[in-house]
Image (cartoon, rainbow, N blue to C red; front, side):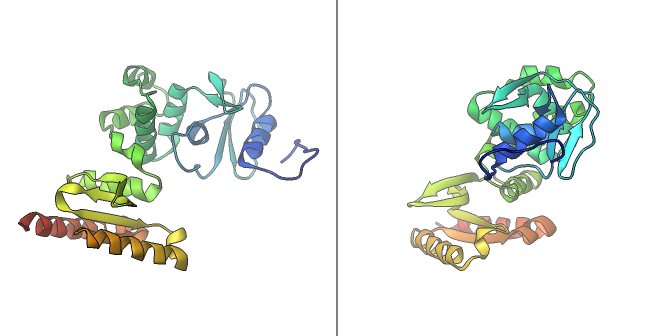
Length: 250
């Protein structure tokens, strides 16, 4: 990175890369927006570009978005300067999809840091992100804190959109962890992202899990990213059909 030089150990980590970005942006620079939300643990995955706020006007290098002429309040979190919770949520709402804002709110609720009065006060200042943060607060869903991927967030929001019964996310049943579970319908949904589910070892593990669940009388459905995101109506219809079948059983 321009103007930053490392001396000593050659290994790098996410923390050192973020610290380099803060140093590049100069004194009083801080992690902000989605990067601050991720570093705080409000998101389980980093956003696609690193966000840094600084009082200076500095060119943004590749992979980093520098928000210049900003001096937001900040605090130290795990060794790095990070914007305050209120400012982080406001900036997140200004730059990221609503589902990530709602996921971050749910995580604040889970950790006991959710202060809707303070957040509404922050959102009432007319700054970028105010309207989006207010909308997210009005549709707060604590269960989003149980999700572990963007696909799981989108699936839970799909259930909300079609006013379907909401599942429990990432719960243990009969010794195995499932992605989504409806106890009233003896129904489980497993969500296959683009990661480990394509590997033979993971596919074998998935099949063993399905056998265990079926042995206990549960119906197991499996949806991948393309099906969930591109044809959500098909997923909705399939879920409702199985829910109706399970409910009709004695």
